[in-house]
Amino acid sequence: MSLTKLNALTTQQAKQQLEHCCTAPRWIEGMLKTMPFKSNEHLFESAQNVWDQLAESDYLAAFEGHPQIGDLSTLSKKYAATAQKAGHEQSGMSKADESTLTKMIALNNDYLNKFGFIFIVCATGKTAQQMLELIEQRINNDRNTELHIAANEQAKITKIRLETLL
Image (cartoon, rainbow, N blue to C red):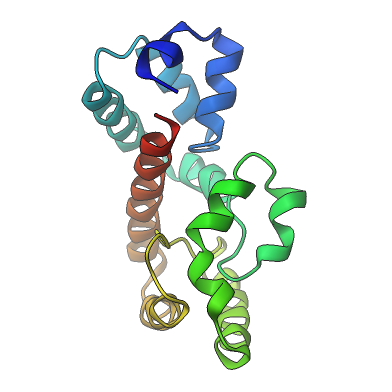
C-alpha cells in the first residue's frame, strides 16, 4: 500500500491497517488523529511520538497483540490481527531444536510470572539461540527496566510493520 492509499482510507479501514502494526488502542487513536501523513518519515516519526506519550497500560495492551516467542501454535487463534506478521518475524524459532524450544517455553512462563507480561523482542533477523540468550539475560532485570526495554522493542516492531505496510 502506498502512503497516498493509506491516507485515503476511511477511518475504520485505517484503524484496521494500523492495528496490524500495533494493537494498543490509544496508539491507533493517536495515529488516526495525526493523519494524513505527509511522507513516510512523517508516518514513522508520528508512530514514535505517539508511542512515547503512552503509559504502561498502553504498552501492556500492545504486548497482548503478540504470541509468546516460540508459541507459533496460537498465532491463528488469539492473535489474528498480527498473526501473519508475527509468524514471519519469529521465523528463527521455526528452525530451533527441541532443547532450545523447551528452554524458551520454560523461560517464557517464568518471565510472564515475574513481570506480568510476555517477553517482547524484535525477533526479525534473530535466530532462536539469540532470542533464548536475550530472554536469559533480561529475566534478571527488575520490572521497570524490563518494561522500558520491552516498550522499546515494541516500537521497533511497530516501525518494521509500518515499513511492511507501505
